[in-house]
Each structure stands twice: as structure tokens, then as C-alpha cells.
Image (cartoon, rainbow, N blue to C red; front, side, top):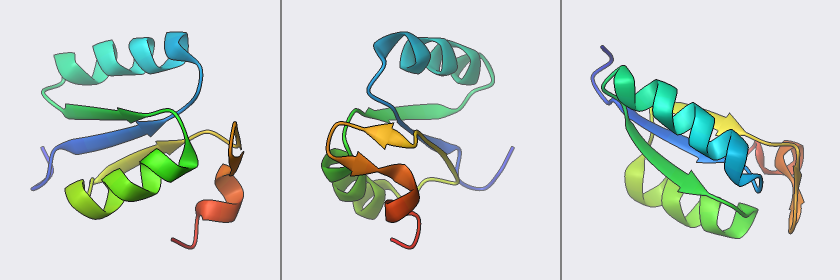
Length: 69
């Protein structure tokens, strides 16, 4: 298990978020979900996750554009 077991899932599709969350929680990860880039960037600063699942097409922009952040 990594030193930080926090995972941030950024996706606007609730089914994908739910599926990933269930799998990761069984592996003892703390899962945080964001449905927009704006929400994701705010949470990224606060939680400093060890893993990030980032969708490419989000309601407020492209996940690829947010990668440098």
C-alpha cells in the first residue's frame, strides 16, 4: 500500500465513478470523486492523491488540458 492511499476519480459519468470507487475501496483506498475539472482542481490541492483517474471529456473542459496542473 502506498504511503498515501488517496485516489481522486474525475469523471462526469456516475456509473464509471461508482464502479471504480467500489473496486478501490475493496483495496483499502480512500476514494474522492469530482465530476468537473473545477471541482477536481480544488480537491487536488486539498487531498494530494497518490492516484488520479482523469476523464478526457468533462463538462467544463478537457482532462488533457488540466494535466500540467
